[in-house]
Image (cartoon, rainbow, N blue to C red; front, side, top):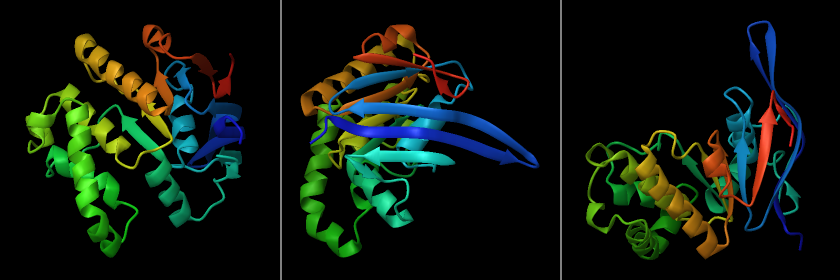
Length: 231
């Protein structure tokens, strides 16, 4: 089996705005190995988040292909892509994307419900509920499970988001500026958690950032400029 987990092959991405076509990605080739931690650096507008979204099947490439575990996946149907995302890829975003009406515990459990029908969820709910509680304890929120996002600090919200990303036991975590909304001390704690979990579970980690110091903690740095990988 190849050591490559996730690949972009000749990927382009364009957006139409009125009569104009705006190129964002311009023929990107990229590979993420199993268990590898990669930082994706670039200035604002370089295409970092777009590449992350295309790699994570949140958006489709305009041309080129996305390959996951040796299989081309960008051409899968909508339902198949959604199942793959929910089961094999975890996402952590800058602004958390938690459901404000739900507790921390229910936000984490929600991640385990997304690709299951009602009967499948009911059959597995005891195990998945126990796993949600275990993950919240792992990220240091055992005493905060019944709190809603508005009752949590920014760092605590991001820890809930990390726990939610881990509920399906993914092969990779894609993180888009996960500390960009946090102060430096809180950011360091969140990063320690992300890197610790990645090492414990041998997860691949792709981290979008503009922070050179943060990027230096990764195994490899990839730089994106004007929609192209330059180093």
